Length: 74
Image 1: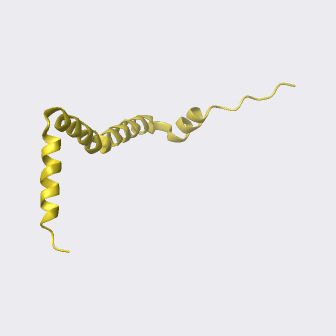
Image 2: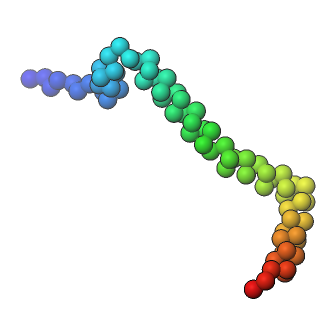
Image 3: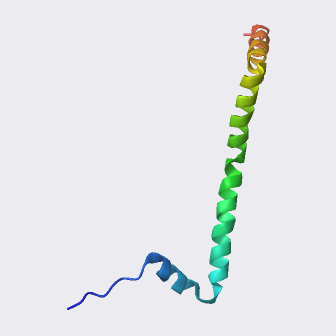
């Protein structure tokens, strides 16, 4: 007796979509774009940090922050 092979999850998902297979793939594509764009602010922060460290501006910003902390009211 041979066992019947179960269809893969992708085949089962495509069977559910019927005539709307294009919408499934376009939805997956748009989801991937949204995830990349959602990480964009964090990527920009990393690049900004690297640029500030290379230009020596980071130390100036730290000194300014420390000076402004001295003026705070407790």
